[in-house]
Length: 238
Image (tube, rainbow, N blue to C red; front, side, top):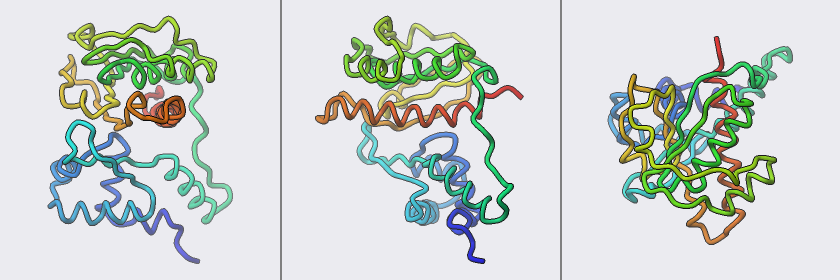
């Protein structure tokens, strides 16, 4: 019996470690080499193998075009893992979705303008958890909420009309369980917070800068919603 594609791609020890790091945050090569303690050429080689398997994607940083952020496609991993279990035995299944009342904590989402990405993330997480997780958002240079963000959320049954842009200084000194940056620029200026909350970076393109207009906001919202679906498993109560 031929080994399932996921095992072939992820079976190497270093590739497995890469997947583990990228499951927590989007990272650049120099960050991965530091975390893993491996030379850049070796890390780049195995990242290439993961990209060939379509498990990992790469995107140039909008803050520094010399950097490239690598992201793990958790949805594809989920699909491949489901197929891996089924290939071994039909009784093997992935865990079901996390119910809204099974999660708790507080999460801060950050982007530059706090006008679309972080606002949508805040609204989606609050909606998905029925308020059991306290979700807030802010920006390093706040701008008015983008009307396309309001429209996209309305299509999902979420009202964003009462949202307001907030400066990240508003939350200085406040304790969070997690701080998630959604744009490359704010990642570079993200302040420290008490008790060292878990940090993660989601390198999501700014839809406001995309000439596609509304469809770009829909794509951003879809990606954010997908990432939040996996985030819920990491903030579920024991």
